[in-house]
Amino acid sequence: MILQPDWPLEWLGAIARYREQAVIVSLLPGGLVLLLLSLGTPWYVSAAIAQVVLFPVNDLYSVLPLIIAWQAFKPSIAVIGTSISWIAPLLYASPNNAGSVCALVFVPLGVACALAQLGLIRRYKIFRSVLVKHSEADGQ
Image (tube, rainbow, N blue to C red):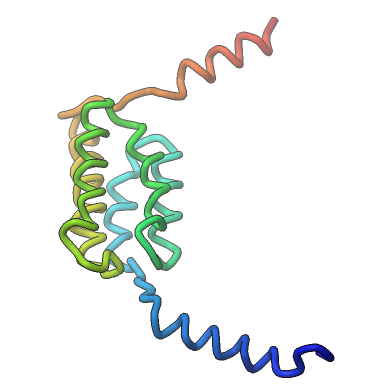
């Protein structure tokens, strides 16, 4: 306070400039459809989707936890889905709009979740072998 007595005003000015420059997108209530589609998948898929849906998206990396959700599917399907998701910067100048996030991130994952619930694609049990090894080690 002695060296910079006006730092609170500068701090409030910086917050105001950030709010003007950074676009924050809420994915509610549309993102809840993806969360409902993920109910038949492992718990970590629903947790990753809930983390992205329930908190505002302020940049492209805010949807990064969905990579965890893709691990529930076969690697070939996961590569296709994440590839579609990562072309967003090529198609949209600013990925901070609900349309681009829904079209390029939620739709591929939602389709994969729906197809898995219908039994048309197999889920990939990545954590099952790890859990079995740990439980066998605990039992000995």
